[in-house]
Amino acid sequence: MSGVFAQAIDRKILHFIHQSVPEGSNEEEFNRVALDIFAYQFAHNMPYRMYCMQRRATPDQIYSWEDIPAVTTAAFKSAAFGCFLPHMAVRVFETSGTTTGKRGKHYLDSLVLYDESAIPNFGQHLLPDGAHLPMRILLPTPEEAPDGGSGAYRTQLDRRHLGSCESCRDLAVHPAVDQAAKRAPGG
Image (cartoon, rainbow, N blue to C red; front, side):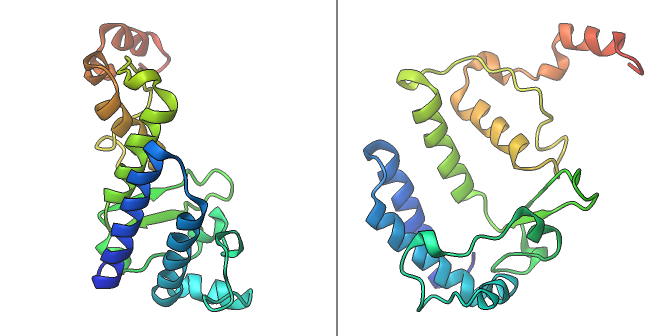
């Protein structure tokens, strides 16, 4: 998101993330932030605005985050949902396209909110007592598969920030992996 209002919303989101991870979620604050995001997206994301208008859902009619219209993953295959022009994206996560053959695209103009939500939540909910455990992630790195989707990005992010030093080794150069790859058909 760009612009003064978008930056203010980003700050609200970051504040909520940093407050809610250690202290637990606050439903009232979450509702306020979600409604602010909805109003911003309604005003600046034309495909989403049209979708909401078809459902007669406008910011002045929505009072709870539970009533904010959610789009299906299929929508990302037919329109560029974003509050900025697609060519301004710093990252584009794509779906596999296995359902229809057409890949959906999720455009991001920044990875800050993505990173800030992933790291503390992963650590709090999946790692006991702040442990840094070895992780074996059998996915390509974001550099190897730049359109590989959010799963590859997120797991690499989690490994870098929450795994042990042992996790930082590139699994692709591990001798056992190399030997298995050579024995595989086509290897």
